[in-house]
Length: 286
Image 1 (cartoon, rainbow, N blue to C red):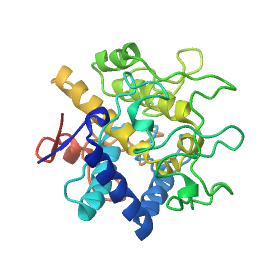
Image 2: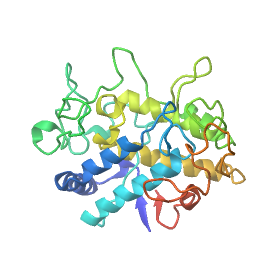
Image 3: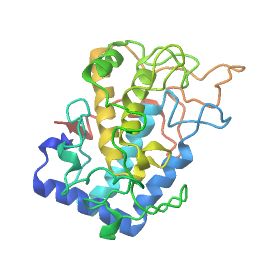
Image 4: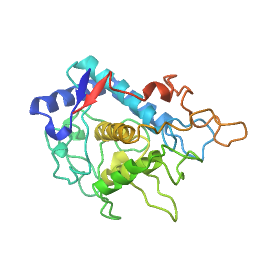
């Protein structure tokens, strides 16, 4: 068992070891493989193929396994490294410790939004974006999106999601109006609510974090580690609540074959959500 720490509590040495391990994965090509995987499984409501990662009940278990695979790769480089989490309800300004020059670097510059500071700045020569979605080769950020301002979610928004005792609900996608999963994943619903929590954080950072290739920005992992922690807190708050749907959807349901019930294996690992309900034998949050 190992620990995942709040990023604000990392020592200088722990930050350096994590950065060094990430850069080692980037040099080997493994990092870009993880970005490609996320792009492959970022499937929207409008597509007819299976969608295990987003706009779906399996959002939490799929990303738990995704982070575990990334963490396994990091720990193969340095066994003392784990993914820290970023509590964006508290560390909610561009001056927060994770944006320091010795960790993730800061905001993008005006104009092209290129990140110029920290180890993942293109000009340092270690971090080239190669996904092919844009012609940019550099990491981009646009904190708060000044042209159409976005704020980071607050504690009240998180608490509203944690208070919902239902895990998810039909139609099991981005317009599910109730349930912890979509309240936390945060898809805006016209006439009901705006973008929140997970999606709101992606928008606040902007740039490379704003699309399907969002793992191009290493802050992705810290963001999703916090979401994983929040899922754990929801489970603790609602011990009688269960992952839904509990069974495969019936024939004729438009979501059959597109979303994953409790015991239906998710690609690409052929692992079911039921196998990812409990992380306590693997890691703990401190």
